[in-house]
Image (tube, rainbow, N blue to C red):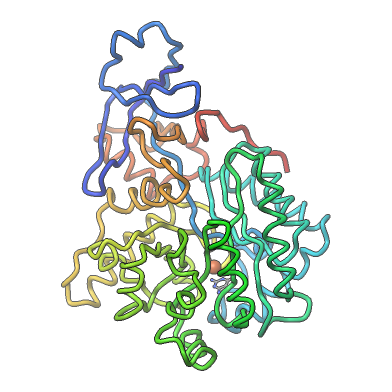
Length: 422
Ligand code: GUN
Ligand code: FE
């Protein structure tokens, strides 16, 4: 057992921060939080104490939607909307991951950058390539970080260099599942790229795979108007885009992440609510590709679970703090354009999305309540905190102004995580 002393903030509920100035988090040998306390209870007085002084201690970030094989395209190619962007920039880059040497060079940097920006767990799209996908799982596991790695299924409207067969997608996913069986924090996730990339045969097989093995599912939903119109043409029997996943058993039959959901309404909204499908909000990506503004307040009011995603490389960086910042700004744009009817998000709400709400996809992750994994960041904000700011304002300034330079320690499941080698 160990106790960490610092200025502690976390969000057991979205409405407000739990704040403990010079408080304590006690962590058990299993890496789970025993409790967070304003003063150290007598029973823990004899355990090892780590004193972080005036620094800030918060739960680590969770990225619920990110494309590892788009690493090289970070910060470039923002001049097109989704569909031409995929064909022109993304598919050619992902095709390169057939070469395991190239994959290793990029995936090492990918894991290092997740670490650098304070993301300890991620739901990741890999590519169609099983060897590179297993390597990505190895690198996360060696780093001590958590994640779900998705071998991507795509067998239509995709270049020959980036297509797999139904059998290859199923076998590849099972290979990642077996490969990660002994890894404590890394596992596999069923990953149909999106409806336009998957034939009904692919969807049927991946839906069966998810349901037979109780595996989670991740994909894209209602990101862009042209994409939605295309899905209508491709899947005329489906009543909405979301229904095209539901009919194949991949819309909440097992835990499901759907990235974007910019235009989700009506029946699709109801389906997400009823089936507890996560809407993964990717506001930096939605700005870069001009996709739209997702109705996050409406999702939250209806009880649809929401998480945050960087969506690298449509999103132009790994920082989930940056995604929180954009979540707040975009929610204000939504508020303005919706005649001020639905309130914009507060800092604590956006922080909760990044920590406890997103973390819930990995188990008890994203809070310092008893039983939660001790995934944590220690922030030395002394360069930003040059006057008497309140603790909440210090965190707010870090969200808006900070970067990796202030991140001093990172923990995942109770272990301090050192910089992964690139
Ligand atoms: N839809 C299908 N594939 C992708 C992708 O790689 N990125 C984004 N943003 N949307 C997608
Ligand atoms: Fe994406």
